[in-house]
Each structure stands twice: as structure tokens, then as C-alpha cells.
Picture 1 (cartoon, rainbow, N blue to C red):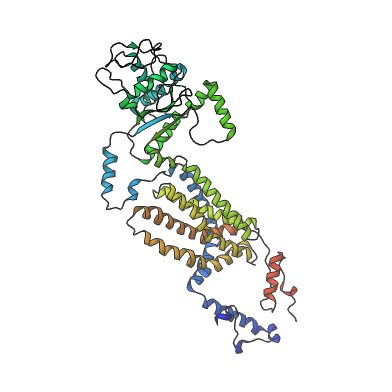
Picture 2: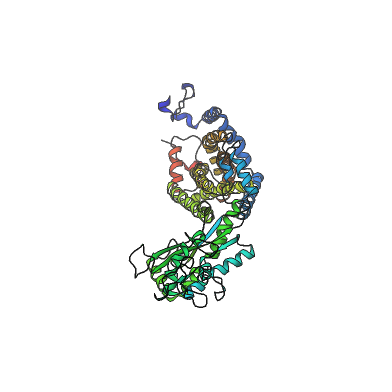
Length: 543
């Protein structure tokens, strides 16, 4: 009778009158009906309630499981920080029979040159001044800790994953201006009109001082250097190497964008190369080392220049955490940074995202469990234990941390609630006398539901992923989701009841007569009010 699924039917031969409540046969009838209900339960329920639950919560097994649980969590915490790998191997994006795998193998084993890296000097640097040039160049008279000198020391140390060739247009521009065959000016025109010595013979040398061009001469002759094609007479022409390395804009005195006279440097870059990078760890380390070099110069130059310091202070007032490159600073760039940059701070993002997920679980569980703090804490501990176990298996099963696995870890927090919340809820509403009895009651009533619900249903869908040709599905979905389900079942069915038997909320249960017309109402009201144990003779069952 589906319409009356919650109504228990009594056969006429088993019906009781009010007078029979006090007879011994009534107790026998109650036992027979209880045994009948027990035999009608599914086999999984009977296994959990009468085999698994008593074994797990027995005296010595319970203590041993708790020690194993604490030891496993400590082991997970110990191996995760140093053992987890960051990145995504590009080979995993290909199927096992793909010909592209051979290409990746050849690149990894045979490629002997690194990617070019550009150290970009942002807008605001005074290239036309001698002081500004000293902060960049590496010739005689330049600062010891200039940008190019720092890059040369980094190349020599081989620690920063930077190698030759190193190209500096500021140094080459200075040497170009000193060669009469390269740089010349017309006589009698203020000394600032360029004269090509290969075409014209009546040219004066460029007006450099101590091998340096400065002021208006620097800005006015720079376009000629950048458009000069290298030749036998002038091998230092900058068009081939630096044609796209410098961005020029008209100065304030010149409004015509096509007129190069009076132009100034807006931004430029200085090129080097990374060393040979083969693994994901190499690429991530190269990004970090390049940024370590570049981050030195912005604050240093701001302190050395009052004008830049003033503009930086004004900019800082607008926003406390400005985004993007700052004025008069340096940032590195290479072609692979776009992809590997996500891994530079993925550990921080993982901690933030998982903390937000746990916080959401904590708040929602606290509300749904009737503002029961201890029950909520037990749920959160169970969920965190499952997430830690999955993260530890990432270390043991060679699963790297990237955007895919990060999403899976956040999903793991949500799925883990299904394994823990029902057991804890059943524990909180149990009317048994002690923590152990309530944990036994909760596991007996809800353990089979957790097993045949989320555990078996998800397990069937996950097994299919193990036969996928894509290694992405095999590694990041089959392995990780299998770990979620297995550890979720182990924690929810075994460790969580043990945890509740030790740290669950202590409530005093209610003892009622075995046969009483109003015993259900009495139990509900007593459990709501947290009443003390009621003796059988204190309950008035007469009506």
C-alpha cells in the first residue's frame, strides 16, 4: 500500500486491546514484529547494521581506527607541501596513439635553445638623460647594478635560467653614435640634423660627450639609428635587431606623429634568452627567476628619481593595489608566459578556493543542522579529511596541481558533504544513551543509504572513465573522482562514526516503556528538550 507507506498494519490475530498492553504476550508480540521488520530489511542494511557497525564501533577496533585515522591525516599534511607537482604536462592532452607525442618527445630531448625573454622598461624612464642611461647600460661609466649589468651577472651565475645572446640597444646606440661612418650631422644647422656619411661627405661627427648622446641629440638621432640598415661600413645599424624594440612617440613640442624630430622613447625592451627548458617545473622556475630580476628596478628607480617617486605616490593614492606594469619599472615577457603564468600562484589560489568552499559548507551545514556547532564541526572535519586524502593521493598517484585538479578539489568538498552530513544528522537526532550507542544507531540507519546512494552510483559512472583514450580523463577525472568516492565512503562509513563516538555532542537519551501508546510522542518531546533519562515507572501509559 504505497499510499500508506508509513502505516504499519497489524494482522487481526496479532491485534492488541488496551487490556493486553500489560500482559506478557504483548512483549512477545513486539519482539516478533521487530524480528519481522528486521528480516524485511535489504541485505545491505542488514550487513551494515549487524556486521559492519558493531565491528567498527567495538571497543578495541574503534580505538585502533581512530589512531589510524589521525596518523593518516598527519601523513597527508606532511607529504602535500613538498610532494605535490604543479603544472600540466602537454603530453597528457594527447591520446596514447597520437603522433604528436613523438614530436613532444623530440622537442624535450633534442631542443638545445631556450625561448627569448624580453625585459620591458615601461613608460616614464628618462633615456635621454645620462642618469637614465646609466641605470640601463653596461658600458664604462654605467651603474654597477644597471639593468644590463644585472642581466650579465645573471647569465654568468646560471642560476636565473637566462643565457646569451643579450641585446642592449642603449649600448649599441652609444657605440653607433661614436662611429663617423654611422652617425653624422650637417654642419651649420645646430648640429642636430642627421647626415649619412655613406652618401654625403661633408658631415660632422655626432655631438656626444664622453661617448654619450643626451638631451635633444639623443631623442633626435635615435630614429636614424633604428632605421639604419647594418652594412660593411656601419655594422652597428639598429634596424635589424632593434627596429621593433623601441616605441617612439612625439615629444610635447611636436604634434605631428610622422615627424621624428623631437621624438622620445615611450617604452622599450632588452632581449635575452632562457636556458633550455624541458619540464613544467623548468618553465615555472624560469618565470619566477625572471620576475625576481625585474622586480628590483621599479622601486630602485623610483627612489632615485624625485619625479618618478612623485608620480608613483600619486598613482598609489588612486588604488592601494595597482594592477599591471607600473611607470618606470621593468617586467619580463616570453612567449610561454601566457600559459605557465597561471602556475606561479596556483598554490595560493588553491588554498583560497578550498577555504571558501569549506566556509560555505560550514555556514550552510550550521544552518541546516539547527545551529548545532559541534555537529557542524564534525561535518567540516570529515569533509576536510576527505579533501586532504584526495590531495595526498595526488602526490602518491602522480597527479599534478593545475586548473583542472583545482576544480576537482573544490568539487570534492561539495561531494564530501553527502558522505558526512547524513551520518552526523542521524547521530544528532538519535535517542540512544551514550555517544557510542548513538554512533552505532546512526551508522546502522544511514550507512547503507550512503553506500547504495552516492557511493555505488558514482562508482559505476567513474569506472567508465578508466577506459577513455584521453589521458586527461584517465588522470584528472578517473583517478581523482575514484579517490573522492573511495575516501568519502571510508571516512563517512568508518572514520566519521568513530570520530562521533569520541567527539560527538553529548545528549542524554530517553528510556521509555517497550509498549506504550504515546511513546513516540514522548521520545520526540524529550529529545527536543534534552530531558534526563526517564524511568519506565515514571511514564504514565494509562488512559
